[in-house]
Amino acid sequence: MNDVCGTTINYFGYGSLVNLETLQTPYVSAQPATLKGWKRVWLSRPELKNSFASFAGLAFLSVTPSRETQIEGMLVQDYASSLPSLDDREALYDRVELPDHALLLHSDGAVNRDQSYLYVAQPIDTTLPEKPKILRSYLDVVFQGYLQNFGEASLSRFVETTDNFALDVLEDRENPIYPRATKCSRSEFKLFDAIVPTGGLVSR
Image (cartoon, rainbow, N blue to C red):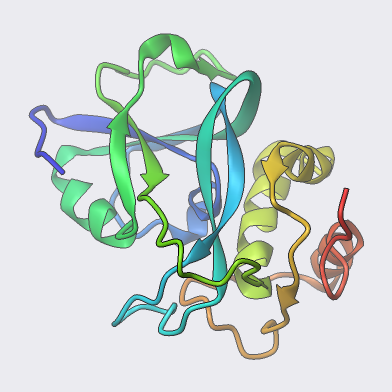
């Protein structure tokens, strides 16, 4: 990934990055936005040493081009000096630049969008498990972010605009494997479990 010039940059979060409690850099601002021409997808995550995915068989979120789809997320404005840390966090992703017309802000907040980025998963090894498991602690973090920033209805929209949701769920809520797990209330857990019940969604 190449370095960029300038004081600030932006990146569009569509998964755990929507939950601002997981951000680990001194970002400037974050605001709800819509990304046009992309959709989310669950993919098989390879084993990565020195990460929470120290074993194969987990699913992780990425995005793929889709002319007819748009997804909600957070446009985070951060310092350009944070890019190395962001790239380390998104170790299995490539950082690609987004054209201005792809982003629709939900407010009138002034943001310099000359350098806006999206993290897209690197090509997947075809020898990986064909049906990986979604990590419940990760899904809780993602759902909490959408609930806080977009409301309850956004959880159903999230499922509708994400491919490969018919996967099993690895129930690790009691002992979270995901290192950026956040604290959720009982009412949040109840809501999340109603959207994606124990075991996962059935094929749609």
